[in-house]
Image 1 (cartoon, rainbow, N blue to C red):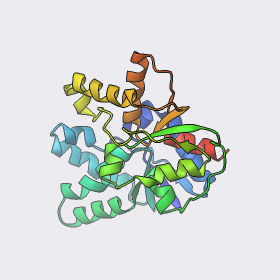
Image 2 (image 1 turned 90 degrees about the vertical axis):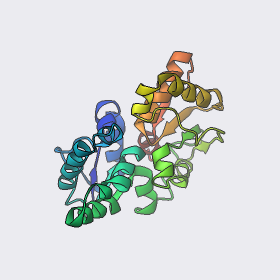
Image 3 (image 1 turned 90 degrees about the horizontal axis):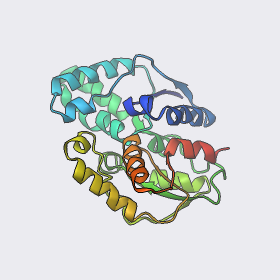
Image 4 (image 1 turned 30 degrees about the vertical axis):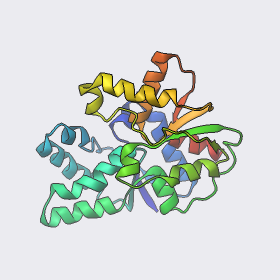
Length: 237
C-alpha cells in the first residue's frame, strides 16, 4: 500500500520528530511511505483569514502533489479536516471531482490505522502508562474521529484516564488564539485545571499540543505533552 505523508506546516516546523515517528510507525505496519518534497501548506490559515483565492491556489498545488498516492495520511486532524471537508467546495466540474477523490483517500493518522489498516494490537510498549487524550475539534467534529486514538492507545497497553474536558476546545483555533488571546488562554487554563493525574497528555493535533503545553509551562504544570504518533510508535517497541 502506497502512503504519502502530508507533514503539515506545524509538523514540519515544530513537530518534526512526530512526523518522523509517523513514518516509522506506518512502515512498521507494512506501508510503503513516501514524502513528496513539493508539499506545502494545506491552505487552512489563508482560508480562515478570508483569503479564499490564495487557499484555492494551495489546494490546487496539494492536489497535484498527492495525485498519485493511494492514501494521504496526516499527523493532524485539523489539516486532514481541511482537505476532507473544504477542498471540494473550492472547485467546480472536473476539479471538484478530483478534490473529492483526494478527500476520499485522505486520513488523519489514527483514523487510517484503524479504518484502513484495521490495527487492533500495537504491542505493550505503553503498559503501565496513564494517558490523557485530548480530542482536537477538527478531528472530532469534522472527521468523526473519536474512538480510534483511544482504542490505539489501549491497544498499546496504556490506561486512558477519563478527563472531563477531553472534548473541550483547547483555545488554539489557529487565528483565534492570536485574535482573542485572553479567551484562548482561559480555555486552555480550564482544560489544564481539570486534568487528572497522568503520565502524559497526547493528541493528534500539534496545534492543540502547542497551545496546552505553552500554557502548562507558564503555569508550572510538569505533565509532559507528546504527539499521538510518537506514543503509538513507542507502543510497538
